[in-house]
Length: 276
Image 1 (spheres, rainbow, N blue to C red):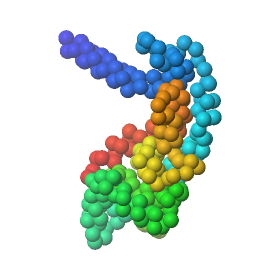
Image 2: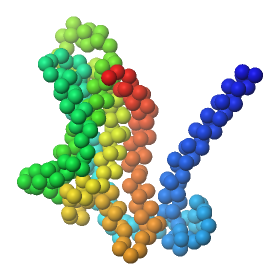
Image 3: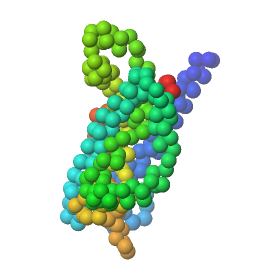
Image 4: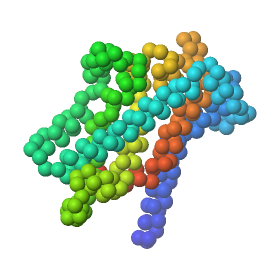
């Protein structure tokens, strides 16, 4: 009887997991299917995910009506550069806040946490004025440099490094390693799960950011993918297949990044939250 209850409970949990997965994937499947449909088929009566005829015409047209490749390259440059910078700054700051002992360490960590509580919109106007005075508006500097430090990444990296045994560090000291050598040769290889989590979250955050690039850029050549997608909307009409095809193109880099780093993601997210 107990065994049957366990099997029933497991079956219910599996069904709930599959049901939740289908609910999560349904919008993406609908987006992908719509990108292959004609505009007439989209607004026809009935609920059908599978297109009657598969056509790549929407993708071709999207590349013709808007500089999608320019938007895509701008987003890749901004997202990749920012993510590399965040990995470096979060690793260095996380190492200092977790393994080094110096006056005011906890105060600095609390200040970092405090910045996470400040709404991003509240600093938009001061940031705009400052970057305008620097002459950085409508440039990659305005899109990249303000985001080279990500407080949540520092928080994750610091908590992850706290879990690593001190014996590794002490053994490296006995072998004559410096601080940077310990960080590079010991902690960096062991931090792959945390780094993968930082890469996925930061890349996704920067890639999907809309408001900051919209405010900081004004020329077509500097627009990112999310701003470019909004430009496909017409004042009077909206061609959903065209927009969905461009959105599918926009989702491909996120999908690739997640596939490359997903095996480390769960491990890094769990390990970084064990200690406070």
